[in-house]
Image 1 (tube, one colour):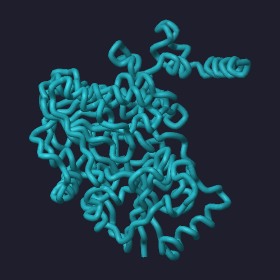
Image 2 (image 1 turned 180 degrees about the horizontal axis):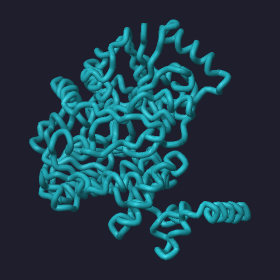
Image 3 (image 1 turned 30 degrees about the vertical axis):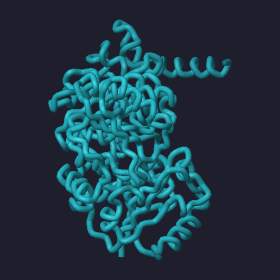
Image 4 (image 1 turned 90 degrees about the horizontal axis):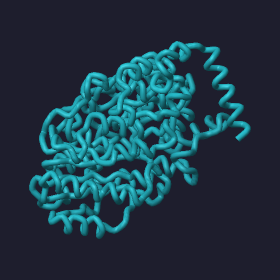
Amino acid sequence: MTIRIFHASSPGAVVLLAAAIDAGCFTEPDRRILLLSRTGPAPEAVADVSESFGFERLRTRFDAVFSWNDAIDPFHPDGWSPRADDAPLWERHFRRAWGLGEEELELVVDSPHAGPARALTQVFAGTPVDVYAEGPGGYGPTGEKIPPLTGTRVRRLLHPDLVAGVRPLLLGEYGVEPRTVPAEAITKVVAELADGDVPLPAVEEPALLLGQDLAQAGLIPAADEAGLRREMVRGAAALGHTRLVYAPDPYTPWESPAELCAEAERLGVELTVLDGPLPVPAEVLVHRLRPALVVGCTSAALFGAARFHGLPVAAVGTGPLLERLTPYENPERTAATLADAVLPGVGDAGAAEAAEVWAAAELDGLLAAVAYAMRPKVRSDLRPAAERYLTAHLDSRTWRYFKRRRLASLALPGVVPARLAFLRSNPALRRVVRRARALRGGRG
């Protein structure tokens, strides 16, 4: 008997897992368990994924549903992982709590370097692992080095094809092969949810504005996120849209919509703020409302609206976000880079048309260069690709994706004069520079 445990922390993740199951991406196990977690700075204040609209339809793919937060209470789900000596004790605890017995297990998790996924792979040592990437972050590097005993157990990376023809980089250091979850399977699951009695306003072809939890995640100040929301309203109005629907992130508390409504009134447009009894996944909103325009920052639903539904989309705030993200290796950088590079800005005329908005030919090179700059120790194999890209494409348009100090610390093209470029490949000189920088930092 084999039991497969699927971990998810968002409605979008459950949608992707359901689509992968329906598409035959997994062999049939004897039992499927869905393990849900609530993450973020205050998980106790966040609605559970099981409370989202349409969840009962999704749960039919699983034999049982359990809560990770309840299983490890009172530890925080984002930061907790077991001590090595305690892992066998926790395994016995989970097997007893979830009725696993002594059966063979398989894990299906998101990024194995952080949060519940990391803890699960440590507790169930030796268990085969499949990894999935729900959003654009899968096109970036693994967040940190993961132990070889974990990395070598990962069999494949499942992902939606959010950016046509671009290969995800997540777990590439272990040679993990990406596998695309078919778009038709994803849209079929979303349509299944949308067939229900969705509590939506009767607004024809609105501009749909997608909120995100950027401030709660510590990416930008709350005041900047409020300004970003107002920019969404102004941008949609400037493109001629008079009916707007704003969908707040259902898993993040935010202030009263009075300020946003006042901005819409000032511009003479109609704004509806969604505030239903159940959180509605953004993918369902896109499917049911069939908006004339979808506006957002870096959410997976923004990419999916263009890629899977052929809808006009516009990105807001990617430039300031790229500038503010610290440290450089912040995992949101990949999504911000992709959104900025391949989606039209809300001020672009192209945002008003259902045109092809995907990347230029050098997008693979850009992602490789950004990935190496983010995680040079994890993806040292990407250095040659990064050097090629920066040598050929670093200009006023692409500098926004890099930091001069970061390139200098890695001795990458862009900060070293061309006549001295040969010095970058001198390992002895690079060791001296690193030692001098370390000594200088120690004096500070």
